[in-house]
Image (cartoon, rainbow, N blue to C red):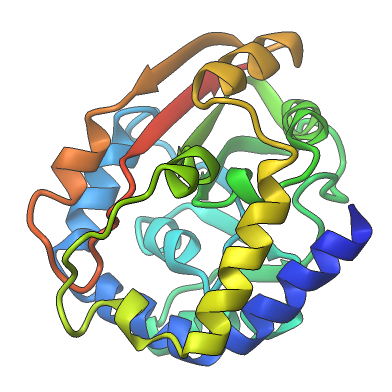
Length: 241
């Protein structure tokens, strides 16, 4: 597992410079309001919350929520991503905190956060069961996980060509990095069961209650193809401690 994590870290170190540019454009686009609307479905309104963004990447969700007045910490396995996230926060002028940390076992005191958010991360975790148990411990009673993800491994095995716009991020990735991404995905598939059904079981076993799945988020956020379009149908998994 550690060798696979090192491979993932190496890959995203290479992707970080171009990745942050696209996330900044997304932050300034209509997608910002769409993502805030999806997150608001699960958070108590009118409260300043302490939120952990796991697998923050270049800090998109962390900055989104910090701009709404929440106290947000973003963590990522890759130092280059965290450096870019700090630059991102300065660029959009929001006070978010960022740390290099393993998503499967974040090093925070128990019951520190009111909510944990994550986007397109959990499919990359070789030990998802460990991650969900760790996150459960980090949440206060009544705290919520909001997980946006997709069944990327099984979609990958059944993939068909999807017409993407010329400026889409996938079109901009060099062939060598595309091949490396495919190699990593194949490695990850060995650790993945069908989702989101698997996640529901793992979350309940970890001690969460009121686990809900929303498969409609994909059509709401990606109603029209654009440079941010995700060709794999994403879902939301929300769970309350």
